[in-house]
Image (cartoon, rainbow, N blue to C red; front, side, top):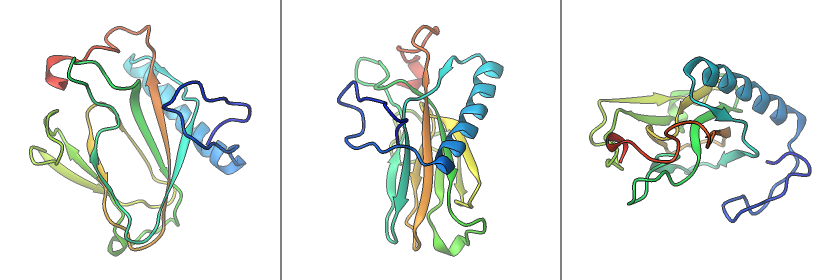
Length: 174
């Protein structure tokens, strides 16, 4: 979803963008508030994103393990994503039997794409109104198969390119 009048400036933008409905705009603004508090408190230099995404997973759908930002062979971050914020738009009480959880592979090694090295695996059920915030550069995560339609609003807060250490990855993150 895009703000009205928001134009695509590079090939990585969504091919189709629609004006953000008021309820989604309010949810995105709430996520922005949380990110602003984290940015200030942690001193990580986050900028407000230009776009957000609503994902609709139909029964049987899932998303494979990935990080929202990773490094290329030269050790440079592939994008500017720094903080991922997900707000679930489902009904308040999502039964575990429906699946569709966000599976987080906590402290998985940077080279691990499957979660085999994770020190802990945490499943987050997509209860309506629940928000998940995590480091786009570090957390390996996936969406488990769902048996019901699952809705999530995702916002990726980007690193301020003028903040120190934003483009080059440290050795432990490669």
